[in-house]
Image (cartoon, rainbow, N blue to C red; front, side, top):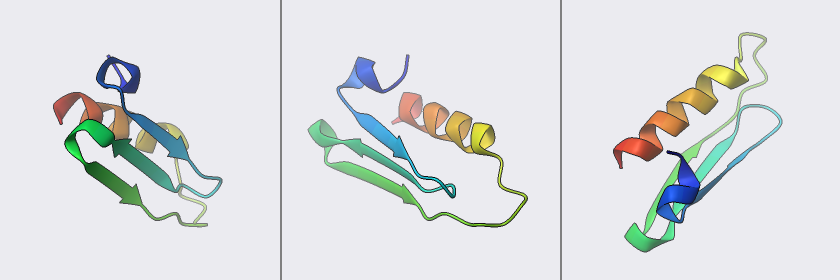
Length: 55
């Protein structure tokens, strides 16, 4: 489960930026960050991990 299984990777920025790259399928997913105090990094990490498993 997760990006290593698929040969892909993701990065997480300081203010909720996420970048997911899956070179084999030429997929790039970007979430722009937000400095809002309602930002929950664990929520977005889980969303991205679920997305990776479904791609």
